Length: 172
Image (cartoon, rainbow, N blue to C red; front, side, top):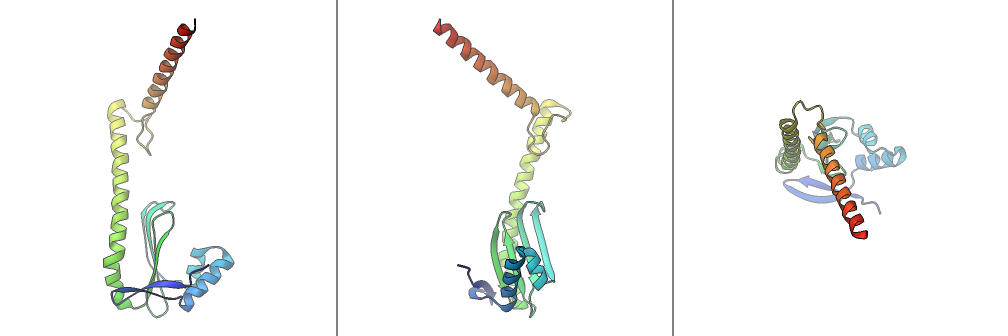
């Protein structure tokens, strides 16, 4: 069953209302074309804000705001893998309050998570570089050392050889 209601932010409060005509048209076009973004752009051609935290291909957080008929905003917040929230702010006077109280904290949280991930990757790369020199053998995405991986494989192999030798001696 398709939900035919949208969350609406008005005068500092959230309510749920039936889809406005422009959103009904977006759903119709999305079903027809099998592409949500193309349908949104066809019905609401004026993008007022797009902010991506992370990478365009796989964002950690994303905001898309489109101007609706009457001057409101249709807001989609995504956590990178799926749509997190879909809100209509029909009155332009409510936009600043909605942005300050809901959008900015969401995006700041996503940016903090992205920054922590980047610092972790940088730390791993620096540790590997400090331990092994020039850095040609370091995975730039993870900071993992290929030398460490090779040494771990050799250590496991020595351990397996020792176990095999011990089991052969007990068998004879």
